[in-house]
Image (tube, rainbow, N blue to C red; front, top):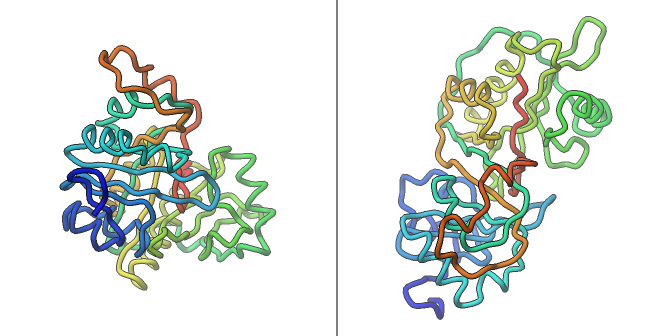
Length: 287
């Protein structure tokens, strides 16, 4: 038990799930088995979600979020974590907007599925790509087509790459599978060239990768930028369910709790760079 009244120290994913509830897919599928700096206040939970490429994010959600954040802040826990990011449900953004000095960040959705999508048109064009051998080509392709691409080719973070080539042999679409801290499959790096968008190539890659992950492991997850309505429609049509609608912001410093909601900057001030501070990438999903 922690030294903060009512707040419990959480050590494992199983304990986090017990607090958040059995229906919480994010708690069940995203965190590693053993947790660092995790806490619960009733059904409100939070833990320090780490990343290979970014600073850690304290990720928290639940019905008593404001009370939870205040308890941890008052005890100096959040200061001690040297936060890079803080992530909460978008519906609760005011909780952190009134309690932290925030910098750039963005909004994203976390989804999951345990269903296998049907085969879709375009899958006959898919070819396997190699994370090492094709890394330079994938990187150059992404640099031309989408600066928000988070496939991280050549780093070992992505596997099971699939792509589509045009008649000249040039890469025009790609996607891969990454791993969450839990080890669960995570769809990532879905990207189609602008000149072929609307042909269903992103759908074909997403369907094939999802089907393979579910067939092997029983589940697949993804994270996508919240402003990409086309991608959201696509993934819902493939059977993905939105479990969390997150807002992530870089933390400049802790501030005293505001008494006037007008004290917080508008959310639009932070939407300069939408990024996901987690162990795997958000989907580019230019499809």
